[in-house]
Length: 336
Image (tube, rainbow, N blue to C red; front, side):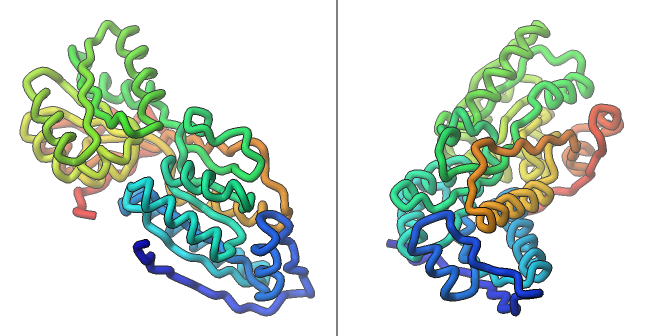
């Protein structure tokens, strides 16, 4: 099994005001005993893959765990794992985490959450996921030891932005991966919206970066704009496809700011630092109470993010978006 590098930050702080730490009834007996014996909570943070949005969420989670540990006078040790978007690797990571007696698992991404929920079934180690857009579709509801935060995409608002920028759009390319559970509900919503507007659409899919690039190249002379939901496969390919779409004069509207930072034109959605903070708070609540909430927490947002480099290349006035969201963030293309 591939050895994952564990980043541990131990906040060895004395228990303030005599506050008890033995609030670890959740999870397996082994994990609870470990927390009591070591005077620390042991938390695993599992990214589905390495990209900007997931790294931002990871950083927010660990920062909030550090802050809460200092505030409460407790100790938290956490491990950082990257599944490389591979279910087999994620399954191996989950098995390692359970064997190592972690008190809670915080997976970031739908596939990571599904794999962690499956591997934690025997021990009932609490799984508190972050950024799962459609938990019901992913089969992550109704499980006694699983909860988390959801960042369901406001598809209609994103498509409203598309039409605000170009009311003459006739055909939209729907670019997504069939292997991404999160993509299907958003694509169906997009189709219903476009049908209501009398706008045609063209499905283009792929499950690897090469396939996504090929899908983009195959629709350049057929579409006026491209829509992608919160799809990790396409996100992984954004640096490759953004120059192709921009050179063809086609704006790409996508489901997260990580796409935009890699060259897509615009998105709308949540602040991922806020989402990571809320996920960490939820995880700590589970650890301290020993109770896993039956409902997930929906983190909504209408923050618009636009790429100024892409907008300039396309000749787009970003001011057309300013009245559609609560705020607008302007970014430049990065290679991360």
